[in-house]
Image 1: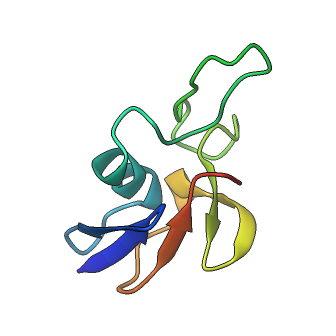
Image 2: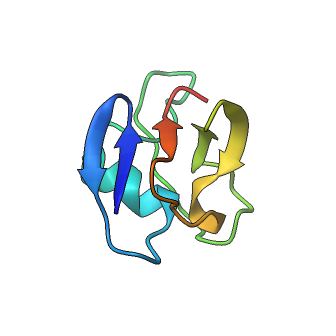
Length: 79
């Protein structure tokens, strides 16, 4: 299925988590940025650390490690 990550169309298989789609669509560039400017990536895989937060279809602060992709979904990493 196709989703969009930061404006790029990405093909992902059914059952893919949003956090994985971000890594496929924007390798090394998705995720949060620390106050010091360092790139952060999803860490815990269970929604506790919050490092996977993204905008999904215009809704901010969705947990990418807990959200399954849906065809046509729009994902922004600037959550």
